[in-house]
Length: 221
Ligand code: CO
Image (cartoon, rainbow, N blue to C red; front, top):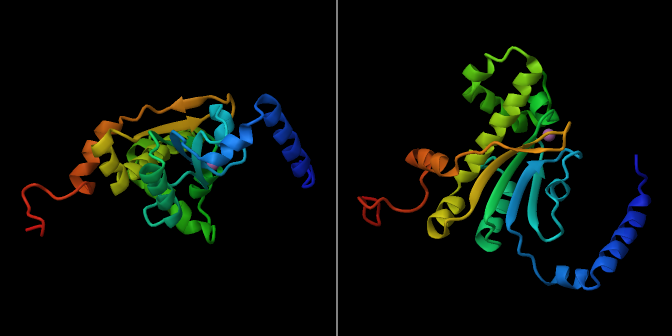
């Protein structure tokens, strides 16, 4: 394990490396941020957002939590999405899970996890929604990994349910929402190729937050 004091040594080295490549690197960095992407991923230490996408500081707005969940009563993730879409005008929102996710595994363990219970309950809900498919997978490891994928799809759907994403997309054609899974064994990012437009139209039957229905007046009558 890396020692605590080493972190500052690493930092100094990193600063020198950046300056050696580009003398005005930090001057530019301090000026503004215009990231094209919002990345929502797992807190797992083995899935470093910038690094796996080959991105530099300033390229991606990042939010991470246990098992990459997008819960509509979580003020933290909702604020991040709102800020990224409305103010930074990101073009793409990526939900990135990873195989062998400890959060997903914990959620499928019949055990009281204390404060983690309500958080992990979101994943049990994903299981319940897809129980008919998941129950046909007899290999436990394969079942967990499929749940990782389905969790990514459901969390991406939760992003699409937000008013800010629906309204901004209607106005500008952006952001597009994507679902990925990172494979720890190979380092490869697997695009689940979710059909953003299709999901948007499906969920808008119930979750449409783009404005008033034309058949109603401004008072909703
Ligand atoms: Co994880």
